[in-house]
Length: 381
Image 1 (cartoon, rainbow, N blue to C red):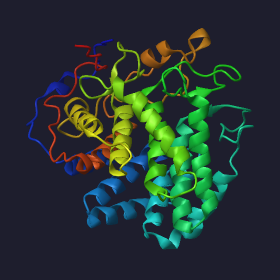
Image 2 (image 1 turned 180 degrees about the vertical axis):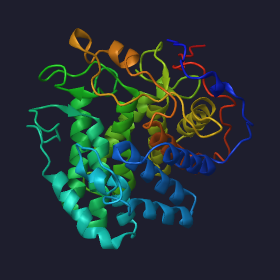
Image 3 (image 1 turned 90 degrees about the horizontal axis):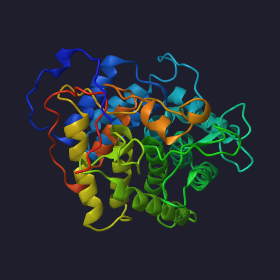
Image 4 (image 1 turned 90 degrees about the vertical axis):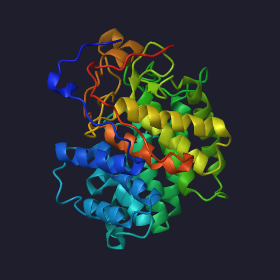
């Protein structure tokens, strides 16, 4: 699928295509994002967390100091919209992670207050966090929003019940959304009709699922009682995802559909998670490392411009379509049209770049010219 872009022709200006380190690119992406909009909401606090991970990976204490300064602007110095998860207002996962590594100890009470709020958020009959005001509307995005925040809050505050609930949410969501025929995840249930799953295997949706599991593996001790529940699902999902990596090193908007356009944010989350699996000694052998190397090169070559603007990221999507098309594969592929600097792109790209040291990637080549089409068409040969 290729659609001619209506963006101005000056976007086609050529740039110097000198290579850059993954760390330089990660910081450049965050700076560009910060230049174009106020960083907040779930995609924003996840980008801040990505910056923290990039700082830790590079042993960049100055950058980690900057992350702390950014997080301390929350909640009072940021203009907040309504959130389904109030923890975003204090910096979400970024705040919880900083607390877990010994920073921001003065914000412990704040962190506990919002962790307790999440512990009592509305749940369906299975105990899965649901959309407020519904009986059973659940969606995989909530795994990203809940599990890592509760995990790091639990580690920071020595509160095992937070950690246990973090595991419970990710495990139950994986089981609820799993397509047993192909091992991939659907995005949501009961948005089309009560008890009905969306038909998709959406790239970023699978990214949310694998990301939440990867974070649990990064935070849980190797002898944690429930670690095996997480690890088995993580390995199964990684194994299901791997064959769908494209020749460019990316994953598609609808993962198993070979004609679907290739997408940045799902790719970034998947690569980050595989990198974590390698780092943790769970994914062994050269196949996994090769996939991350190919993916990082694919993201930099096809999805990041020389000025750190981004391409090929799906906009916000929750069971797209109307009437009979709602939640269909066609709706997921055709309705969320990607555009430059889509704000979901930055967190996923920064996170992916943070695992470059795990696979020995020291430099990457960015796009020579910005993209002239809305979609990155499928590449099948």
